[in-house]
Length: 460
Length: 176
Image (cartoon, rainbow over all chains, first blue to last red):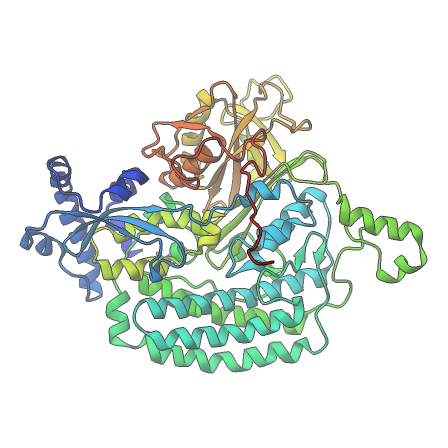
């Protein structure tokens, strides 16, 4: 790994330690105490510059931070970026300490979208749970449903039928594609390739149209539920999926032409927001952020769930840990997901799409018409809910943004005691100050975009 | 997962006479294939450091749990159940195994040493637990609220924090 020689800068050095009120009141800060504090940072900045110089010698880029600093007599300013900034992907606010155009320390301030979903989850039955968690990461809702359902099934000890497993895998991989397409669209837009926004949304729409035909909704599907999935795949689903698989490769080629090979795109992304494997692991970063450093950690491969050990795919890794690598990883993960989807097409087993365990699954519709007991049974499951044995479990899946985990505690009742979602965006966001340190404001936009935070998941 | 289960026996001290399996010198149970250890607050940081040295270098997650209304919680012998728990999920990237660390935190003194020095990635999760449960992490570099507004009173994920406590006044629509 080329990054092994660079020293680990303690990520805390890059974090601005101010309270939210201070950040609000101080639009511009330049008093004596701050200056004195900043003087001590100067050494850090020049060392950061030498860090990036290693990269820029390997891949030409990066403004010379130390010279930019010494040339300017400007006092450092404290600037709030967001929460209503188009490139912050929702309502992310970052208090930034700026020296001219150079970002020094910074602090992400979050919580604007906090609606207490983990508290809400404690008041919903296990069958209602997916409707709640699906609204967290709204760009990849099926993964939230999946991780919650897997956690509930783990506590229940329920086996789900193979068809349900493969439907889940098919839908999740399509969701990964749509999520990454959304990333390509917004990443392009953030960096000035506005046309990319239209193309990314257009391709994503193909997949959302398929989701609508399967689940009835384009987003927030409530499709994957404890015990299986809500409904079987509709007639003709194969041709719909084949259509997506037929259309996308050409479009991805176009993206390559539009962005990957473009010198402007490369200049904006290469060597920007560099993180090493050691730093990423220390900061608990997962997903493309971790893989961009060369660390081949993908839960689908390293700790397989569903039937990922039965399909062939490659784990895409980067080498430099920069913004370009994170872009390239996501672009190529779409291709890998297409491989998995086409294998799902061929290997989709027949059989029930949800477990036959009557404890979890209501009786079939026909039985309800002829049996009073079946009607009561159905009523009980949907009003009172089913009881889950006491215990606790942690289940994790590889979402498009990293490790999405669910820590579930049950006390034996029909509602969970505690539902904690380990949101990859929330944890990955901690890396932002570290990634932006010593870079330009324009690079900060590229860095925020490359972390691909979904604020619904960050704030929950 | 099987590796993790095997480890429990490996690390158990030779002289342990009780049936209680031990790992890193603290009680350990096996929850559906994942080892769970129960250090006290005093042992917490030492155990995390031992686990990190043993390969669990990746702190995936840290969260608080309020067991106020949980009557069916089970903790192994030798662990005094308290109202709050801090649950840490560790990951061994090379060995591909997980470890869960559950630390009991009493309600009258909800304080735990911060693990940020060991795992910088726990900074935001610790702030979240402090914000939503009122568990304070001593020596945390930035013990401010993270999800709730800074002037918020109370800790919403506590079990005695009621849902819908804020009254909302609905007004009639003019001209109807």
